[in-house]
Image 1: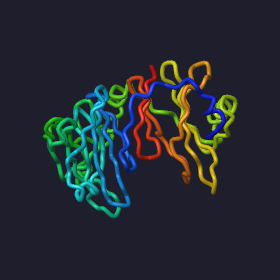
Image 2 (image 1 turned 45 degrees about the horizontal axis):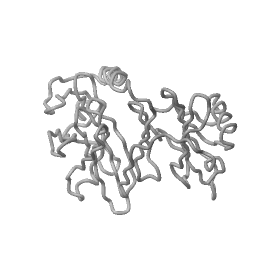
Image 3 (image 1 turned 30 degrees about the vertical axis):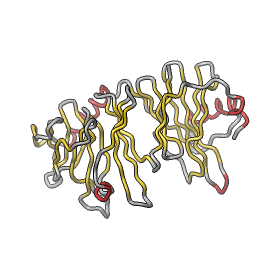
Length: 278
């Protein structure tokens, strides 16, 4: 463990952790219901599970789906207390087909559209692709009923982008700066001064209230990399330092998110960790 971590005395309040026992592949925020959707996959056993975490009460709900069926499903999004899953049309190329909406609270199937492909969430509802026509339809979120047809891809992209700004207004995703870029050099210099580390590859950076959150990579043995996450106050004083992952073959993105002044990240691939930023 680096020397600076031994000297670290003040840390951010830890709210809770969840160890899923298998890698967490995907997180999706349901900002309308204050929930977090999670997709957990065990590639060795070909098992997948889907969860919804209520963020105020920290209550975890698992979808009660057959294990054999789950592997051929994936998490698209989470919206209005629903987990929106996809199936596959052509499994060899990973083509998404089918939308299956499950209640985040009960785990029961609310509706399905097996012939459509999920496209995105707009202010007026769920947009889905009609593969044959190459146009979009709008679905009622609570029932899956088609309420609008023949929406162009250009129009659909605009609607999804416009709603995303309102939908995620209380959520902060980090900016990714790659090695060689100006802002990478600036943040890397800050990390060298504060933590005496040598960042490489890429840095993710975000500011939230009184804190600065940085995810960065350092060189490990056998040409691998380690992913670290550090939190600083606005005076540059470190408040938290964590190993997110060890022995990686490259760098990633979206290694943490901030929602309603809480910091969410996955540690050691299997564990969701939540810290309070207030």
